[in-house]
Image 1 (cartoon, rainbow, N blue to C red):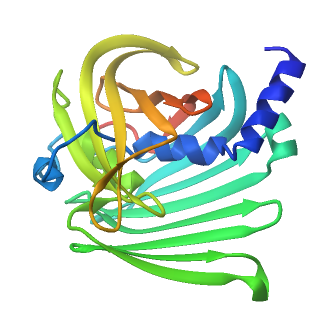
Image 2 (tube, helix red, strand yellow):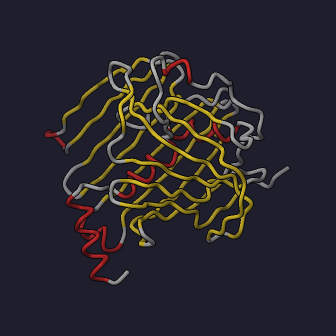
Length: 284
């Protein structure tokens, strides 16, 4: 892609309000389903957290973009601060041409129950060139309370919303839950994910196994197919107008690392790919 082509593409994305980092992170763990009739809640997976060995504490970095063009980078740190909790800390920022047109810095922290793999709380801060958005999520067995503050200083406005539905996940806990499952070929999992401002019925289908190459090396990988529907205030399913489908590859080994995502969205193909990983503790 030439410099001129990249500039034209970036301008088009800005005009359509496409947000590379936020879009890709949402697509990473907001899985989805095809058309489901009537009582869709009955189709949600009932399995508890699986028995696959828990993820070791680690540092990892990713790049995000579209059509081979890197638009943003991200760093993640996964830890187990206490015997009963997992914690995810992530940062992301647009870079290069995209940052010149659309500045964004993101900080994301999430805490999950280490036994059930259900979410406890999530905080996300988005700093744009002209505004700041802070989203706080507090989860219970019956739903989530969302507090969202937008603006700076005295001009900031805060809104609180409650969404009632049992067994909700956030992005972090959804990833931990799915990772814990057997992930046998052709198996299907459906969960409801509340990543920031809306709930989504999420389906992931295990397509099969194949090799994949990323910057950290060549891996035997589990290939997952993802689709998405929004759950509205009346607990009805709605189509997602900007997302078509996505494919995720995770390593088929004792770690089950997220290796790559390719998602078909309204502007084309966006991706996230592992660039580096370092484990804080050796495998026992």
